Image 1 (spheres, helix red, strand yellow):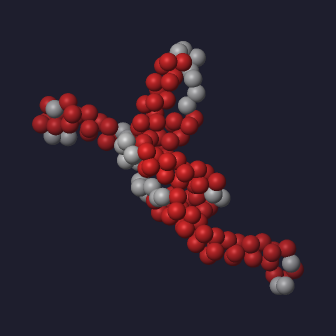
Image 2 (image 1 turned 90 degrees about the vertical axis):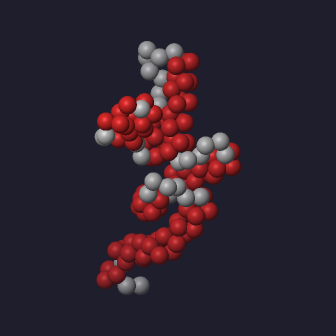
Image 3 (image 1 turned 180 degrees about the vertical axis):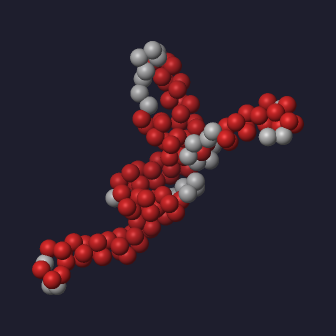
Amino acid sequence: MPVEDVKSFENLKGALLHEHRLTPLAYRQNFYQATRRGDESYIQYSTRLHSLLKYYLNSRVIEDDYRCLVELLVSDRIKDALPTGMRYHISDKEGVEWFTSAHIAELADLYDSDRGRDHDRSRQDQRKPGGGW
C-alpha cells in the first residue's frame, strides 16, 4: 500500500476493509447464525445484529431500496429451498452478484429439466436389472 494511502483515514479504512472483507454468503451466515453471547446485553446483541445485517445488505448493494430488499430476501429463501447441487450451480453463476427470484427460478427450472430428468432416469436404471425398462 502506498504511503499516501495510509495518511488518509478513509483510504486506510477502505484498504483494510477490502483486504479483510467476507463474501456475501459469509455476511449472510454471520447474521442468521448470530446468537446472544453470555457477556452481551440484549441492547448490545440488537446492535450487533443491526451491524451484521448492514454488512450483508451492503455486500449485496441494497442501500435504502425496499423493493430491492424484498427481492433479495425472496431470492435467498428460494436458494435455501433448492437441492444442494442446484444451489451450488446457481451460486457459482452468481459469483459476488445476486440474481432476482425470477432469474433463480428460471435457472432452477432449466437445471431441473436438463439434469433432473437424467438424474431420475439414472436412479430408475439402477433399480432395474440391465438398466432397461
